[in-house]
Image (cartoon, rainbow, N blue to C red; front, top):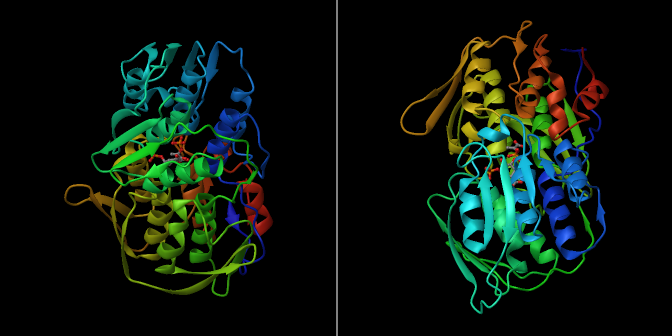
Length: 405
Ligand SMILES: O=C(O)C1=C[C@@H](OP(=O)(O)O)[C@@H](O)[C@H](O)C1
Ligand SMILES: C=C(OP(=O)(O)O)C(=O)O
């Protein structure tokens, strides 16, 4: 792929948030109705929708979608389904023991079909304590994935006396927990986040309509393009809100330091260029999905980037730290760990001249490196990976003035 030249401009279409979509689908199913508008066309969301619509399936394949695997483990448990819940080889390497242990304490019978602590899972029955008058108390680690906590929160209202989840360890991806709370409240459960614990009342959901916001994680790739495009470039992204439930709106503040200014419009944002800083320090604990985008922009601009909060990156679609290290090295840039869990991106004489990017079955590797085509010719292996969250990504790049393929 290559950039055909000139300034970047115009409007780019974003997918709807897959995180909001996949929560809204679970809540709609538990509420027994409600109209959802602007559901994501991401494979992760279309898959969730299909799987929820198959009440008699004996094998449920969550493919490579973390939210689908984790949310359905809880949802299929409380709807008393007997199924084999499986996923891709990589999904079978992503841990789920914390969620399974919690569900067992609530009355689930779940067995591991292959390796202890990992999918595939055999869901074999659900017998909650129907006489409970006090909320069930659970302790759940927050430092592996917030998706376990969101999954438990969403099924909490189905328990006779609700649920109290005490969070232990460092809690990562916190905004995703708040997003779950906000959507639950929208569907009628006044769930409370007390910081160290989450209280879910036994209030039944009621059907509610909701229009999904555009996806801020997907927007991050357009921020990267504006940051690297010729002077005078800009882009408009419809469907993003100033009051957002998505933690990846943090891209606004991060990119303000890397040369992109955000103007909120009535519907969406307009991105323009602004001066950037020579070095940037950022904790990604709350926004892990932005790490790849920001690392690549910093490397390309020669900005020294200090990165913390990357702990969860090793257990996502791929080991994202190793993948970033390998691919940045192709441009003479580096990502090195200097001290415990403290990483630095550094580069000098960064050049794009026909390198091929490996994507490691990870949509975000493809999308984070694609903006480099603004600086020189580039090839991306297995470009179809983007379908997980942003199926129209390449088509939108073509409209914006890239030659693809
Ligand atoms: O709940 C969600 O929708 C998500 C939570 C995050 O995962 P972790 O909680 O595992 O960090 C994020 O990386 C993922 O893309 C989506
Ligand atoms: C980590 C991601 O997704 P999930 O965990 O839902 O597979 C992602 O989209 O970057």
